[in-house]
Image (cartoon, rainbow, N blue to C red; front, side):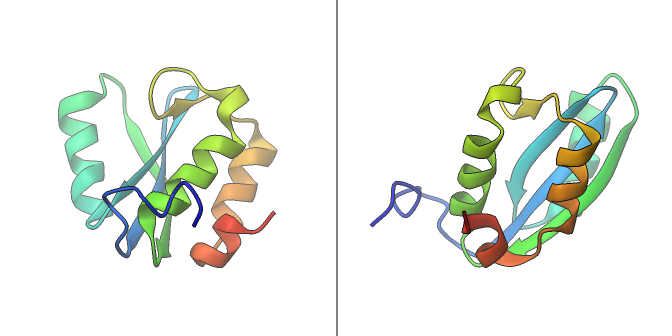
Length: 102
């Protein structure tokens, strides 16, 4: 059993990518559009852009894989400084298999 299998949010849902200025948020939600609206209205002082939504079987595991993969780009919390190539890579992924493959 890998370390992501134990996360409490081990249910299907989505991993999303939001851009705010030069930072990107990699997060999880069962309702990503609702979460995007919350972030746009309540969290971000700047305009937000929803770039990608990836439906996955285990959103906590998928989010954890992405957070680990881009750990060296981490800003604060779930916010990352990603290159254009990294953003394209994330936007092209689909499903948990894509998120968890090496």
